Length: 145
Length: 417
Ligand code: SF4
Ligand code: FES
Image (cartoon, each protein chain N blue to C red):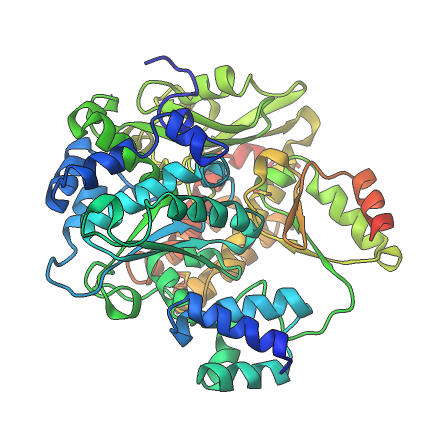
């Protein structure tokens, strides 16, 4: 484990009053956001650091949408396909993404309501909001990444 | 009070702590801690206010607090900022624009139950708001309203933020607790209730963001005065997330029981968009059965909506409809709703885990015309009876209820194809 990661682990544990269980999801979130997935190696390290059995860590992390065991080379764009976004054309956007999969510089995933229904259709990239999406905007985004 | 949108909470929107103080912020905290109002008095005041939880269930807040055993050594308060009910985004507004009001509410509420530590459980989808709240907490610490011996009292308090990792079910309070304990978000069987055995076995109160934001206001005007706003069983204001086919979407604050759903759509939402045909309204997030256009002349409050067979839930109004020639998109719409429940069922209880898939299958069969709508309704009704009261949380039931309701109310539209 690099010094930087170890420092961050300690910082998180301290913030949560040295409670390893309370710190588990925050630590998983940190690794996920930092590295894009959670590797076997990291799970071992987390297990050792927090003193929580590996199988319990697996059980937790496979439950949540935004934690992943799978290594990804590209960023993931989340597109909401729930009711308010559907009413504003989320489907067309998803269709466009599916058709142009090979040309995209990012991965995309459908997701449920992200609390941006007043800016539908909406999405998240790096957990930053993308509001009032359109195919135009997706094209622009693709060039920028 | 007017039907305007700047009533109680919106008046306290502030960019920074100075602006908040200028707007009378922290006066309630000063009153409570500075004057040494005993915790029981605070609970009493909140009971008098008639405040009901704004997260979905509408449980009386003061009563919830009073279940916390006085003598327990460690207690926690958790602010539930995991609004995931599709169509809901009103807590986002408080988190972004009134974080100080929320913080003040958290401190007073924690004092009322004598909790030294509180957590804000923030949904991962709102990670972009994390820094905003973190900063607001820091600012509050810096002026001494958080920390040790707040305002010279013997009360100490710290607020920490806990970021979720993506799971609708964690908005359910016991699933939220499991999640904070590092586990998957399976709702717990109740009893015991969180007030007895909550976070790590300690008495815990879990309140929604908007609920907590109301606390400083109640302490400022007094419970009795607060109860005069709104109607007897639905006091105070409500933040409405308005979305769908209206011209103006967004968060509006309304006085409960004083404005009808139609007025909300017409006056606040500026009406249905051009060329769109109003098919109905979901009055409280996707778990609430739809209301037909001729059912929306009811005032927005807990009871009126229940009387119509739906609920105000999370305060999310989704106005739906299509362009004239696209009515049969309704099924797609309903399928997306059912898919939501199917995806978000945590899997703990068999009737829900399997039932949500079965409902999904029925809709597919209806779409392919292999099943008649009436037949579908019957099957779903059977499934509902197997879920009702037999599951750890209402998710599965909600899926059955709304599907049945949609199929019954819109059988003509769904038969259009
Ligand atoms: S009813 Fe469904 S979502 Fe709720 S606990 Fe059971 S399986 Fe999980
Ligand atoms: S329905 Fe798409 S953000 Fe809420």
